[in-house]
Length: 162
Image (cartoon, rainbow, N blue to C red; front, side, top):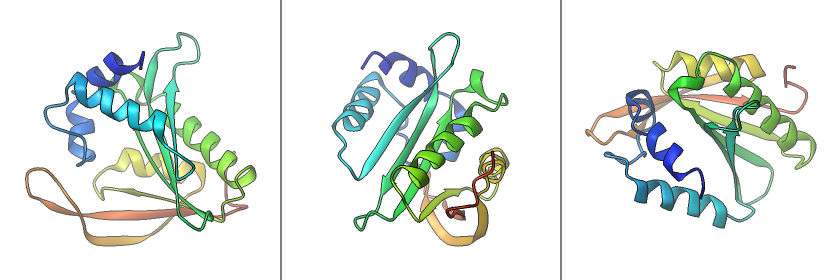
């Protein structure tokens, strides 16, 4: 719960709000408390992690993996606070989570989605070894009513890039 102020601040960022349709608008401290509380209470079906700056220990973002009911497939989502972007922090976090999911949890497929225009998020996925599979048409509804496509990426055992 110590990160609630940092999460609240990060989720004021227009980029996060633009690309992640389910982030509340406006984003309040109560939203951060609810989000972090749900992370802390999550069971085996969800694995949420904070991304922190190595040197300072400050919150840089969040990466989360849901695991399907049959325990063979994970779905990953992430966001990075504006000051931490462009330095490879998200790529390192995604690589670490993917390695753990494939090696330790022995998942057989990891997937993530990105907005077709979110080039930065797609670049992160590709650097780690995720393959672009295709477009999920009319996949996500944004708070303003727009319905947008998503790009599906997947990673299978043996495809992770170091």
